[in-house]
Image (tube, rainbow, N blue to C red; front, top):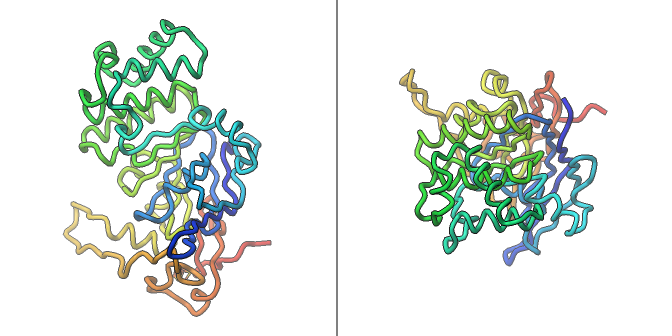
Amino acid sequence: MNVLLSIEDLYLNFTTFWGTAYVLNGINLQIYEDEVFGLVGETGCGKSVTSMSILKLLPSNAHLSGKIIFEGRNLLELSENDMKKIRGKKISMIFQDPMSSLNPLFKIKTQMVDVMKLHHNISKDEALKMARELLEAVKLPDPQRVLESYPHQLSGGMRQRVMIALALSFNPSLLIADEPTTALDVTIQKQILELILELKEKYHFSVLLITHDLGVVAETCDRVGVMYAGNMVEIADVEELFENPLHPYTQGLLSAIPDPRYKKPLKPLRGNVPSLLNPPPGCRFHPRCDYMKPICEKEKPELIEYSKNHYVACHLYGGKRNE
Ligand code: SF4
């Protein structure tokens, strides 16, 4: 499979009133063409800022280093003008709350037509036709009614479909979906995830799916990366990760999922997520880890390929790159 996007040793710090927050601590990951890559972890682990780093949509107090290679170019070296040709076009994004992206004061028709006209340099009639076709592609039952509606007149699921239609309008190579179903009812969640998978097959783009929900990962993703406190701790094919989790944090996440088939007690992870203003040295998971060794407090474990296509960053498995 060809690599579409490669993140290499990505570090991100924020200068804040309280000190420096060490938000991303050397992230490495690759997203292949035509795959769904899931990024999971607890709130604040760095999933969303990883996607914002890809799009270079960070506040002025952010300091980013490393490489993000997309279609052969390092995005971190591109000018803002060049990024505008990629952001929202070759790399599109949908968010948890579509209302944050749609303007409540304008009809869907106005918002879609404006975007199409501006970016595709087409007439109003052509833009309207394109908008209608895209709404059909995302399976909105009455596209004309949707076009004539204001955002508040649509359900959450319908608004998310409109956002997906807008994202598709640029024929992206990569769709970043940041918790796209978290705010929706369970039945609608399933429909939206199925829609994303169908569209991915039809239009051949890759998906970076950011979620805290391992159930969503199991149903949707080809591969998954597990993040903890700004580190990528494990990457594997989805089946492999669920059957053979290596990292103690991944094992903890999986044992905290309720399984309705068994009445076994849940085993929550002990302790709390560390502050990124003063993260633990060495392995950032060590204060919560039952398998901690002396080296864990001193040396950050590197992400190594422990078995074929299964990567882990933990001293239990070596934790040093093979040079
Ligand atoms: Fe636990 Fe050490 Fe592995 Fe970190 S590196 S997860 S502290 S065993």
